[in-house]
Image: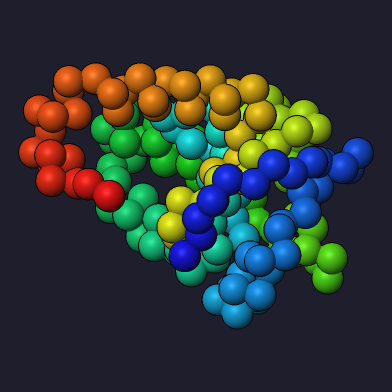
Length: 152
């Protein structure tokens, strides 16, 4: 399970260094094999351990090639999907098209989302966090039955 937000830097070759605390779990679950693709609802990337990505692929296989919206989702997620493997130093190369899609430069946020990570450009992450705070504080939170009983 991946959790927490980590500020990391991309090197000049477009590689990110996975924080040390995630390296052993990633090597144990997938040998460091990861799939990176775009998020179709946010300007960020999604980074999956290979077994988790294979579950996504199974769902994508059930989508139609004749329905425009379903085909568009497949085209985006699979078209951008890039395989990578952490090297011995825990680095992972992000392709130029992926970095361009998420506007990743030097400062990146790696955010744990239980079974995957999100990769955000730091300014977009900050803007998204502000928007999330506003959403959570609005009355619509109380009208959502799934969230009414969610308390910490």
